[in-house]
Amino acid sequence: MKKPSDALFMLVHGMSSKEKQYFKQHANINCDDGSNNYIKLFDAINEAEHYDELQLKQQFKNTPIGNNFKFYKNYLSQALATSLYRNQSYNDYKSVIFEGCRIAEIYLQKQLFDLCNKQLKKMYAMAVEHSFVYVLPYIIYIETELAIKSGEKKYLDKILQRHFKQVEEVSNWVQTDLELLHAALKVVTINKSAVAQNSIKLEQYKSVMDLPVLFADITALPVKQQRNQLAILGNCYSMLNNNIEAVKIRKKIIDMYGPVNAIHPDSYKAYLSDLNNYLISAERANVKVNVMCHLDDLLAFTDKKIFEKKSFQYLKFRTFAYVFNYKLDYYLKHDNIKEATNIYWQIADEFELCIAHISDYELFTFYKHFLIVEFVNNDYKAAADFCHSILQGSKNTVRMDVVQFAELMLAVCLYESDERTYLKSYLNKTKRNAKQLNGRGEEAEVVFKLIHQLLTLTDKKQKAPKLNGALKKLNALNEGKTKVDYFYDIRIWIQQKLLQVKQR
Image (cartoon, rainbow, N blue to C red; front, top):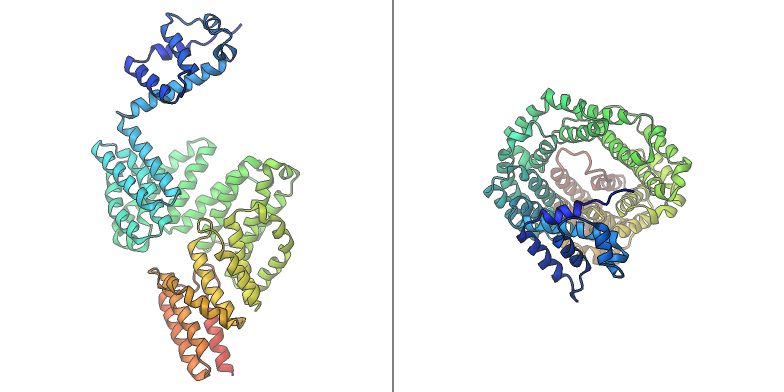
């Protein structure tokens, strides 16, 4: 017969009197009627000179403890471990800082940006005061996410002022810790002004990327860890706009998986993410990749019988959303409207069945692509309906640039479908959106003013100069871009209007 473990006895008798007192005080606070059974078990073990489980069971015979001794023994072990951790945390600044950072992350998830910012400032000051420099990468990471998710310039400016000091303080680790290097690169590439102002630091990080020790360390790791480190390295190259190296690294990761049909479903989720990164890097580096072949392989793979199991069905729906959103995006970016339209009609029925099973993000990405397809095929009312679907989505699930794009497109669709009365009220209602400080807000202001003018102008000689003026403003706002993001470009619409005016 297996001898009962005396680990709990050793734990109790290894505690100091202050630790025992702290445990009992906080345990009694959580007990309303004073009949806390696991405290009774604690007292019995504390008073015993040696551990005798049979004697303890006999002592608590016909009580809840005796009837379920194993449960109370395990419960007491967990309660003691938690109590010891909390007791030490009061005097352990490292624990306080990590716990404080976790609270900051919760504030960030709840979109309480001011609270998150204040919390991070406190944790940063405490880390510096007590020389816990190695905690700074964690703070850097949360601050970077705050700047990105809030999208507010006041956070971006304040955070960037602190970032470079922080990165400098942890520079000793940059050459040996890829995750820290990733955080540092994310900091300096967070916006164009930061990159321009800190070009020297970028060059320093670029030189680190050439260190052969990074690759030597990676190849010595087990396969799973190799994949994780290569993924971070690929992200670093991508942030430095070194897409040639990024695609090489990400190709290595894809090759590590082997043929798609041999991947285990447990690894398939990670494979989808890695394949997406690889295809994006290949496109940015102008490396020829048979994109459609990769996407069709995914569809064929998820037709396997194992994906009919409930535990793997979500991967089947996720693949459907990823593959067809990617295909639509690819054909629209390459102006292949015919293929995009064919896919749109091909998946219409299946899409309706999948709506309940795909993420909100993928759903609104579909709506974005659908509205472009309907718009370029001159079905403006259908396109307007998809604009409405996007604008009715939650702010937490729809990217702000997609929302602003839908606002512009809805105005254009209403103009084209001759919904003049509704259009006027819509333009007035959304006027505040056109006054946003960011570039997309300026673009909205130009487009909304243009549509207001088109509603009042009847003479084609007046229309052409107005259209030309708007086109020049939009080109200036989007200097260097042939298209804005991956969306149908409003400038194309203005060019079409100009052509129609000239042909009259």
